[in-house]
Length: 250
Image (cartoon, rainbow, N blue to C red):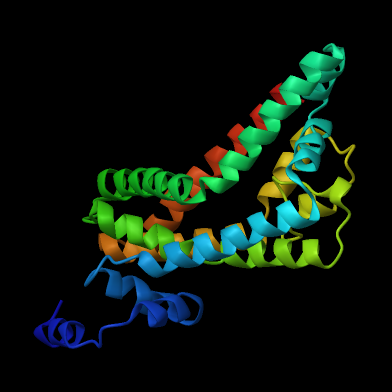
């Protein structure tokens, strides 16, 4: 890099958290380059928690956690069969446990969000640094993962709007609550393998993957192609694994 380029980079204006969020959608390279200056990620975290608990409130008000649990069981033939074989009292106890577990998993959103982001960041960091000779730090990868995940907020917002707009509680699927993917529009009797594949082809997910690819390559100082290979490579692995799990438990 020439002295002129180095000077221009050092004189680049710093971004606020709000600007980073905006540029993630309009000019993502500006956001990810700024992460090399500061790895602060608090605003995406706050937005995720605010909108996540908004969906939590919508589910509680418009569906109810008992109905969420019932829907989840119906969507898993093996689990539904096992529940039907239980005596009434055991089934009631099992349902109570399922309801509590489902509600807690939503209520503990901040904890799961941080842990999940840390795992993803760690995997991407190891892949880009050891696989492609990158020089990213963990906190850079962690911050990139938070900002790259911002498109997921649109899915949460759409799900919340759908519930308040009068979505049938019995059709609510807590694992796929917005029409941003092909699987959302397939009939319930679709094969589990096809449903898992169709659900993975999600607009917000693909958007997030593209942003993560750009971001991780920038903070690691590698070619963008390396970022795309690292991110989409792991996505393909998770999709294949998800299809296998869906088939095994269908």
